[in-house]
Length: 316
Image (cartoon, rainbow, N blue to C red; front, side, top):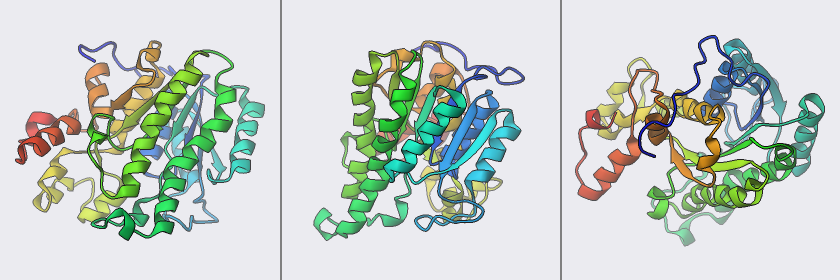
């Protein structure tokens, strides 16, 4: 990607995704919730899935956020949010969801595979053979198996007509992830979506469906803000304990990246690509909520190459 290919769709009043149907898998909180809302802002009907509801909190990653709240935020933003309780490890539940979408909408235009929920299982500082095997298997079930189960049932609905988009959300681009991403099971879980996108690009591409992988940078989710003991209003205070926190971005940044892709009539040029929100900001011209365009991939590449933290101002 070099010079900007096109500007992102103007969603101030315009609804470039009106009539389009999206499924954001794992949209209870964080980046996936922001993606669902931004797609709604562009006019899409968005099915948001998860296991945390007002009546039942997920036992894997307990949270105050719920899928009903996400759906309401989508509708408030200008789309139509539809909450669906789905455990994406259960094929019959995913199949029922896609059958419901088919019955209610007749088509599916955008799939965002964003299910993760493995942070609490990570064991940093341990060798592969020292890690708890059951935890490792759970990481792969949550971060990999959920993705291909969802694609298995969603793609037959998406390939009926050209123009559909599959976004495999991960952590790190293909180039960045050539390094080992400790611990072992995290490395596997975050590289797998990149390979899945490449495979789906080959298999679904002949039907006019685009598949790609996409990574945010250092995302300031609710959990990250809590970890650093800051709020969105004073997030820069977190730089006192971790200078690299200056390169962090809001969940809206990755959401704007997905929406720019979903509204791009020439998105097929990215089929099989491994993309980052920072690179797409240059391609489409969108920014984070503060007007900056963080490029953490380039920042951390410089940091890891030189061993010295660059000035974050040069990478925003």
